[in-house]
Length: 248
Image (cartoon, rainbow, N blue to C red; front, side):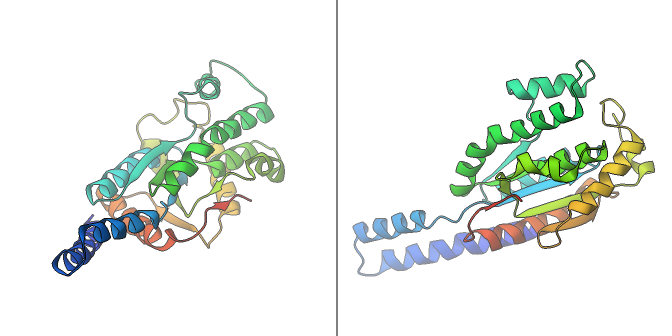
């Protein structure tokens, strides 16, 4: 939390110093406004941050805490999660996950993928406007869960090709014993220890050390938030001038 506030302080005071310099010099108001307009045009893009991992590892809680910390320190940030159960596609996924409906493994995989494609344009718009997105699950979950059920990993990755590539993936790990102790575990279709173990193996196969970090989630919420926020802020600082990437 402290590291975010310190970074925000220097940025805000740096901007104030520039404005003060112009205001106290011979520059006219029109020139000040023109300079500010140029600064807005040079707006850095936001970062795409994804939290992945086994169920009940605290991904949703940590995503929301990270967003809250970023906003309180002056960053523009938004929480997103997949599946988005508010869309028509998401409603079908919700029926499947809550055991109210059945689909083939291939069919449900494509529904999960479509759910992410539904959000692509809006995600890109937000990122280009300087908003950092902190996302609870993304394409890697879709590939990991479907391939853990026996589908080809290459087949699972194919329909995800062209979606936005994250700037940082935080893979939260948790032992089977710690996972089983978390509240609510076992309420949905995929919350089965044997499947969760296979899913974590698939995540490790997908892991790309150039933008993935593995984090042990078996600690207090506050300690985990501090650890994650440090990595998130570093990523936001480093990716602002880089072009958006695409998966695979």
